[in-house]
Length: 192
Image 1 (spheres, one colour):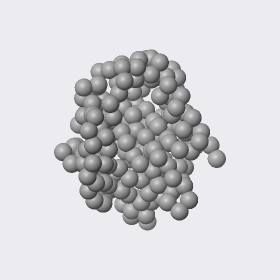
Image 2 (image 1 turned 135 degrees about the horizontal axis):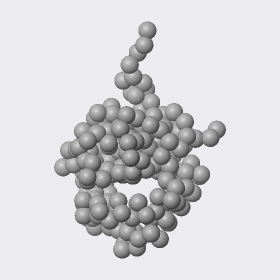
Image 3 (image 1 turned 120 degrees about the horizontal axis):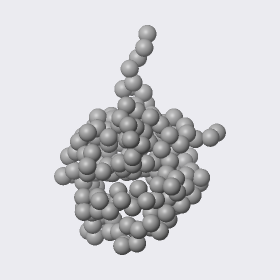
Image 4 (image 1 turned 45 degrees about the horizontal axis):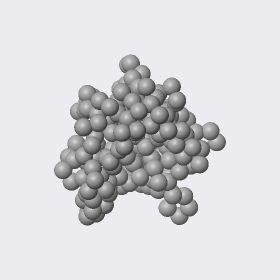
């Protein structure tokens, strides 16, 4: 079955990355470098170059083909401009059918609902053509905006994980959130 490479909501769409996105990604990553630094692993200088972003896209495409990760550009539907990235990573099949969700949105559009819509679309992909049963996410406790995005999309808090991820050079505590297919279905409006 061919997986869709684009899903649309009201303000945003998520779509698979293409090599033609390299220049726009370099600009996005460079403009948001200091904004994202506290929430990401340490990045080499090469990451912020055309070669670095091209390598990211190639890796994303290889991982997509291998059913290990689905990475999407978060695109403003009005302009088709890329304003972020969202991914379903660390996919494990079999008895678990689980993925971890990660995302970032351009500081310039923060607070406008782009992340909330993108997460909703990623869940639609995950629990539809992605054939997953569970999606989990980890958020540093002080990142209240990201926790709200997850709550709006039906994620429940599962617990606390000390020193969970190494971000900005240090091991950081995280709150853990998750949602299952059944929980998402329970939230869907019923039509009679």
